[in-house]
Length: 541
Image 1 (cartoon, rainbow, N blue to C red):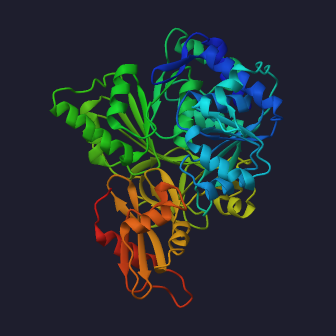
Image 2 (cartoon, rainbow, N blue to C red):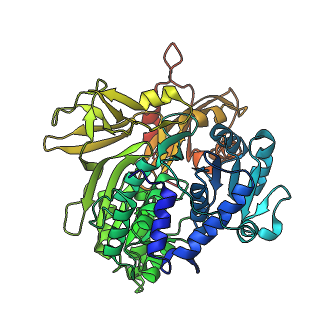
Image 3 (tube, rainbow, N blue to C red):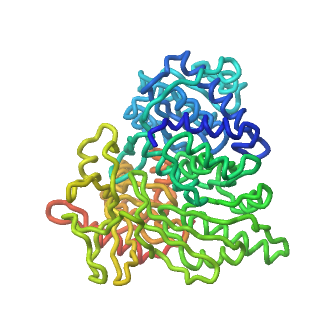
């Protein structure tokens, strides 16, 4: 369907005006309130010159204001884009400059960093601060003041506009994945209407009919996205629930608390939870086991499905969770650039597996020439899925050509996820083949961390690799050679990187060696470095 996503959400609002759309702690918004506040925020932004094609950055924690901001931007036919709230000044300048952002909605916790970045971002002229409206910098406007002080922007005819989602991807700096709303609608439907057994709607009238079939006097889905909305998993599962006429529930805390998640599922009667692999699932299993052992088990009887994307979800953790909830564990391999590529569903009584999947219709495992890998051959290829003709990395044709490739007269997305095929068609997932380290759902480019380490006066040479980790999927390990007589501790290395890059990019472990192995041309021996990192077996923080 080519309808603009703002028009899609307005259609849901018209069918369900008095039902709750989003809840966050003790605050909620009905669909009518959600739409009204987004329209008023759109009115404020329009008065500041934001219109069709304008880029508006959103640097917020999960909550009502995040969804309102995105909805407001879409209403104006402008383009929202995600900002990682962990970013430091240099990272913010790079992202906001690359994206050509004209406005930013940010949490008060980011005010100092946004303020420091302003001087290097002349295009950025509108600043809206969420939280602490009584302590808003003189260069910004309080979010609530903007919403309550503006007239609602009127509805308008809209087209198949752009949607932009930044991802760490396969390059050093985040890249903006630029798509059309028609692509977004297809992806989001898979997270909502299709899960509920409804056919894919081709028009807004068909969407309205689907919502009425699902019932206007109840929530078709109550979804709790645990990952940050700044990542595609959190955003697309939120949109999926909203599109299906459901309600989205966010955790009150800004950091993950598994007991809070379990208590929220119980209190809000959540039926769908989205997570990012073991980094979320293992602590949740621990919390559920501990509560049961203490004689105060959580009531998870409402839970019907748990969805994970992008990080290893171990078989033993799935089984532990299934002891506490009679649900489907839906494990997906997908990327911001496209997919899904493969899926595995596990229910009570099923044998649970780790990194084993089934290809979704249309997806393939191919070699570098685009030829299908033969099942049972032992060959490792890369996952590929059909790609929309419009999707690309914004402003980077070289990266676009490397990831979106032509085979057999058709365009495919090949982000670099390596996999093999067993004789029965089972996909064996081997992870990303590039130097991107996926740690707890965050994509970290190894060379960026290496460059930060090399600015330390004690460091002569450095390699950064990912080592397997039971909780985070991969942990960042720095293999470092020091200058003669120099000293460097784990804490010093972490602090040095943390002063320059986001916290999730800090090495969890430091391994000191006399000399790093490199080829005569200077190319790093990454297999050796990974062996050193893996053998260290330092416990996870």
